[in-house]
Amino acid sequence: TSELPRHIAFICDGNSRWSKRQFLPKSMGHAAGADRVVNLIKALQQYQPPITGGNDNDNGIQYCTLYAFSTENWARSPQEINTIFQLMERIAIQYRSHESITSGKVQIDLLGNLEDERVGVL
Image (cartoon, rainbow, N blue to C red; front, side):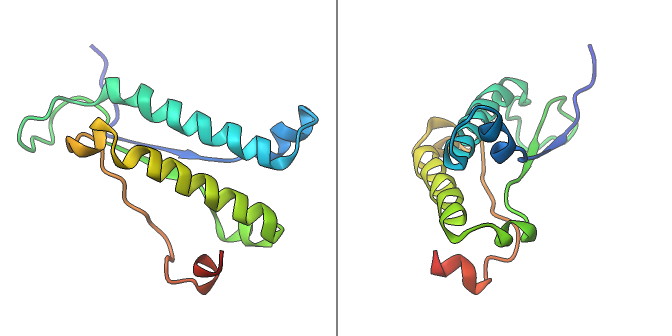
């Protein structure tokens, strides 16, 4: 069997370019990107090691980092930023009661500067 990495990371990028190529508004590109994140999380669960009491030697993906909003994104229009944050909130609410969260199989941690005053304004 091949070894799986313990940690993988994705940069969520290209939603605006995708929507432009599809002749759709940027908000539709961000929505499509959010749907891909949901599908990604579902797909990755099949590669999780079994819960065995904290053995870090289990073969499987234990961590997934999604780089979803960079400081460069603050240069976008306030409307687009608001759309992105609303989508992130929708996904968080959707997953809050999901079995994978409540069972402890998946844990979501937010990283970054959550103290930035612009976050609370949206």
